[in-house]
Image (cartoon, rainbow, N blue to C red):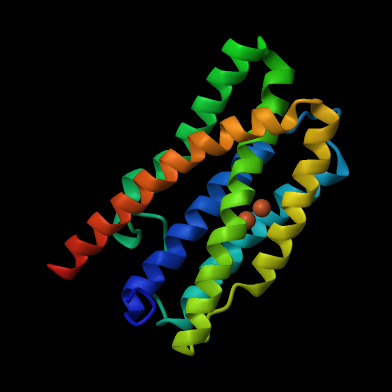
Length: 199
Ligand SMILES: [Fe+2]
Ligand SMILES: [Fe+2]
């Protein structure tokens, strides 16, 4: 339904682009200027590319649609902005209260857990979207993003293993926070679609 309507599809792409950009900026902001690694730099660069690439796909819907991240060019704008920031807040609270982390350690651990949960979601969401694009015969495609997101999940697991022997337990906490927020985002999206259908 979203793909069949150019304007709606453009807004969906723009919303994904906004969320990739939010993630990219979060990774960049969490980088330690001294100890930042190859993997973190690669990851930040690729998330920034995803935001740009999704923005570029909008041209394949109709030229000139959704030039910025202003609310009128997004789906569920308030919640789409809130989702990642809220996940970050909940993960940081957990790391602080349950693991007693602070400062630099907290920032790095939050990067690991938040990003892990997002990558699990990305590995589920993008293939479903790609399949829908193919079914609809759309010119838009997100295959290059899928490939990189799969790499990211593996890289996050490798980093998490170094971080803690109990990484799976902590990662499941982050996934639980994310699952609730994702369900709320889906609800906000369908609200946004109903609103759009009634315009
Ligand atoms: Fe991404
Ligand atoms: Fe990613």
